Length: 107
Image 1 (cartoon, helix red, strand yellow):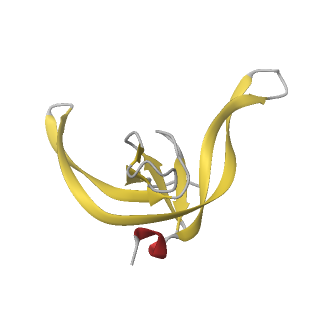
Image 2 (cartoon, one colour):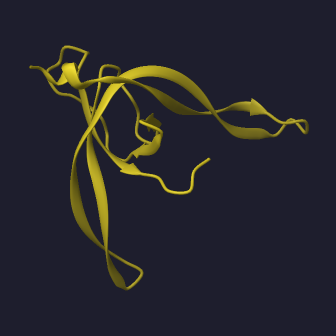
């Protein structure tokens, strides 16, 4: 079985700053698109920040479409942010790998 056998339909939100509000100011918005992806195993990373050690969990992420650093993925009703540069792992433009972090308290 290939990793593509585990892909499910999800939503990708890309930051779009071309939106204007009623005062003609740039507003950060999102452009949504449908992708096929899989969020896999979790890894833990220790980081020293603000004078203390914290543990961050990151998940392996695979998709059939190229994504960008900072994109938000809605996978099984959970929100994840891409925190690494996606790699075209087999150079066939259908299997991209990145790391994501789960986002809490997102509407």
